[in-house]
Length: 118
Image 1 (tube, rainbow, N blue to C red):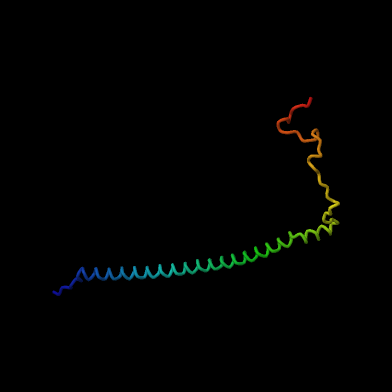
Image 2: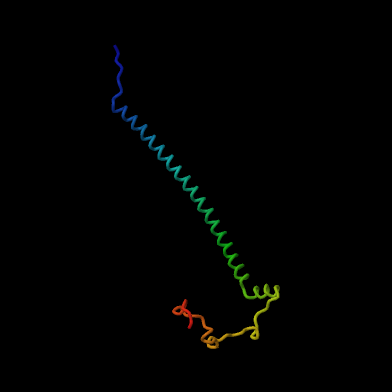
């Protein structure tokens, strides 16, 4: 009667350990590839955002230059002239002096507000 030999438990443990090691190695490689591709996607997104930032700053600079040109005195004078207005001359300006007002014409102070005059 011939007896079959059973594999030794150590030999079976070695195969299972080797298989588990290969699975862990493959899993590690998969995670490494996944992290690399995710990093590449994030890098591409950051590059796109950097380009958008540069474009937005250029548009902002153009808008600021346009605002400066639109709010300049020369442009306002030209636009006012089209409406028939002109810069004021000395003859057009009237200066009022505060001491020329009579005391009765002065605005009531807060302490006399609401009281009747006798």
